Amino acid sequence: MNLNMRRAVLCAAMATCALILHGVDSISLPGTEADVPAGAVTQTQLPPPMPPSEKTPKAGAITFLVGKESFTFSPGAGADYLSPGAWSYLPTLDPETARQAALLFANALPDHLRLREGGLEVIASALLAGERATVPVPSWVVASEILLPLTHVSQNGGRNASTALDHLDGYVLQANETFSFNDAVGPRTADRGFITGMSLVENRFIQEQGGGICFASTIIHQAASRTDVAIVEQNHHSRPVAYVPPGGDATVYYGELDYRFRNGSSMMAFEKLQRPNGLGVRLWRAMY
Image (cartoon, rainbow, N blue to C red; front, side, top):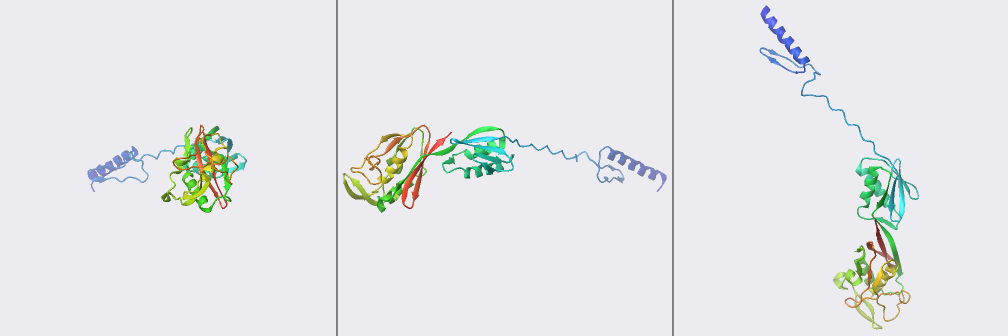
């Protein structure tokens, strides 16, 4: 290689080094090739951004009002029961963790309290916020319940009464709405589960479809009369019945005799109760 060629190669190498120092990772010169040194910083490969600092979840005492009772959650290691009315919770920014804590709490509520639609979401949202607050939770509270023995009811009559309560189980009555037993239960037909049973009609017993259903309407009256509803229609049997004191019965006959009451200022829900030797109903009131 002559002197002029050596000078050309040397100049090309010096130019490549200068460009690398200025952030250019490669260059092509006539008759030369430049390799990028390992670890060289280029214009298209910027350093990764620093991760944003994680937020710290807030942790304040939160009191939930469920029905007429209050439950206080204090920041702690997790959703644990501390003492009557008091719980602890893990401050978190994770919605699923908050929901699991709300579900654990809901499942541990006393038997006379239940959450209504949206109740879990209200609790989970409050736990996520983590701020000291008092939060009303949409809930159901037992308004009344009654369980009557089947001692004085025929087998078929008890079955028809049970079927009638099946049609009422889960029934929700709106605020200020009038409840009609006949409308809610419907016709006493075989396709709706009713069978032939004994009915007391004009002071005599006869066999007819749905006979014995008056035991169910009497159960509803016994439970409703223990609340703040206004009785609109109540009819008595032609003779006293053995399963309630005189005047405590409520006979019905589809299309003729009904049992009706006007609801109060909050929703009411019906729940059927059944035991080996008894039949009854639990009435729930909506709160908040």
